[in-house]
Image 1: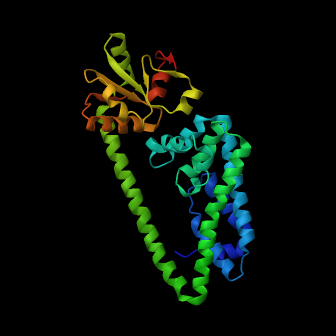
Image 2: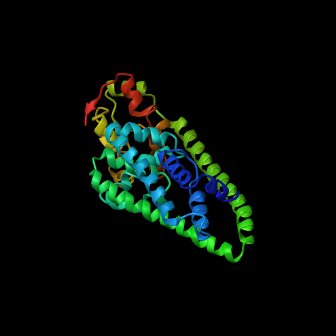
Image 3: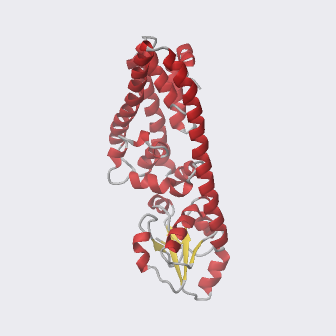
Length: 310
């Protein structure tokens, strides 16, 4: 696998713009090789480093501004859609919203370096009504830092190539093998962990009808709403008697959770993944009667079962 130098030389700056834009609009294609290649080409004068930077920066801003306004208009719906296509939807929104919190502006200075957060930071900022002026300033700064890292890294690489042209063939050959091996190992680990969580979930989850029958019969259960704040903004209802606990704080409140009744966890993520993860964590702390709700909040609401205002 070689850096796409010939492709970039053929199509120039507009290829860089399109490549970066498509990457940050949500298509999972690697953009780092293109930036490194453009930086390397600038060492020979085949490309202008300043123009490359400006085209790439414009692409970043176009993609991020689009997601900013999509997040502002569609809120939690678009976040759930984006997280459904990630390898770990259980942590997707939770991790990103936890990052885009009180330090929302500063997050954009490093968001581009973090997979997942780079795609979700802009729609979350829009959904949380961040000032557009503040968003565009910090997003531009963060994009500039990210682009400079790889473009100047490529430029340095290009200088090394001028001293030893055979270095390009060596790096191109072995970097491809290492990249493929790393991707395969990463995907295999994520798939294995996901499969293990789903098996544990399938064995423990509770059907919504069964929970309703328990509530109608007056049985004591402890229901925990694990949804994120943005989801409650869009739909300000929950199950009757549910306790609102953030997933990243529930472990610290485990001493408040009763041991003499079933603990019902629900979220609105695909396959109840967040509920399954929290259930496993609580079981490790000695809380055995933990059961995720099958279908979560969305299934309970779809069946027309009672809801309570948050």
